[in-house]
Picture 1: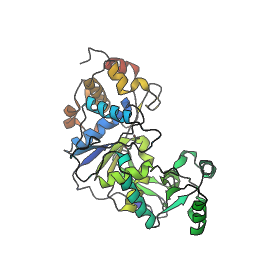
Picture 2: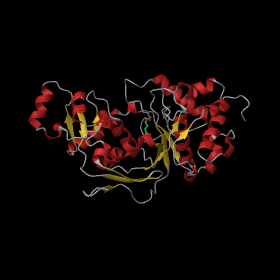
Picture 3: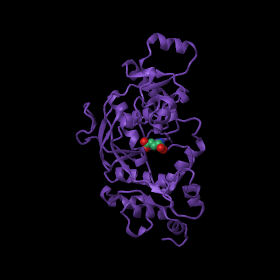
Picture 4: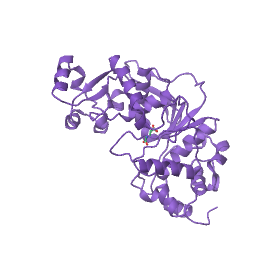
Length: 343
Ligand code: GLU
């Protein structure tokens, strides 16, 4: 908590119907760590009789591939997860709009225009190199300098001159100089200072690509998502998403940031762990029930790891059963998953 009057995003229990979401980025194949997070997000919503949305987060044109999006949908079906509205379209999602972020550009543009006209943003002309020099915390990355951005205080005339010179600008949020506080269902009370959440983070990159933070906040708000269950690596994004929602008058969901799956060396599972992609497990003969049974065991709700379908775990799901810390995926577990006699 800071002395400057931290904002408190925690509020009365959400009376809206439960809506959870799965939000993959089609920048690679799903791996076991994604399956873990998506299974828990799905179980959390379904165990409360809630709806589940599948939203394809393909905003980054350099990294997203339609073939990965198709493979992700296929892998999620294979696992036994379902959703009430998703990228396939149809009329399952009246009023929600497309469930594919690359088709929601007009919605994000409208949100940014509202923030801009409320004076809550500014164009930033700094190059990556200049940002790196400004950043006192290297992890702030390209989303924003932690040190005061000189572009924050440019005059209208200076901005016009830079635009007239053909300079491209990112759009940054004028973040308040105070902590953002919220209560994570799993990690407990959180307080992020501006230094910790990245200060005036970017809503749109200088090449025009809409930033993840803006898109996710707008989508979770407009889609009436009531709970976000995702890996704890995304915890530092939450204060940024809460700020965007606050400034746009959107009701935030509750957040549960769950432990991560690690490889046998203790490294977080990532797209480069090709042998732990669901596609590789499938190709090696793993059955979806065995994968879900194993993940259910890790979640503390399927002792012994018996092969199961996700829906068999719905009645057993309990956040209290989840381990507190990250979990290692051991090679012998993988070997068992791929054994044809499993189950
Ligand atoms: N699309 C993001 C990712 O795959 C996750 C977004 C979220 O759950 O908020 O990393």
